Image (cartoon, rainbow, N blue to C red):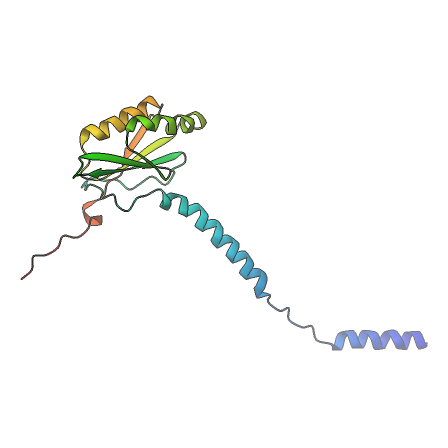
Length: 164
């Protein structure tokens, strides 16, 4: 009988204690958010690092938006020095003067991904002969898809108004 009174008290005590709401743990949530932030920053920074802000892209009124699927893309930034009348290229953060040097950079990439494309971001002052030599070097490396980067009229820098 004593045992049954003891179990009745235990059941009553178990029923009478209200359940506490679980507490929200903020520290694990912050850890997860920081990991996601680092992940997305590392993915997006590779594309941003390949663009050169010194390149002033030409304007094309019929420009199409860039493709979202840019797997296997190599960006070539082409600068033109009007004083020296010479061009230079940036590929994978390396500077090249001669377009013939591109084959050594592009051939291994084409071997690993035959569907790779080259995106040429050429300054609007670059001479056609220099661009042509870049395209020939890309073709000699086995690149079958060459795309040019341009801006639309609306995206171009606004023209300055004359002073009154």
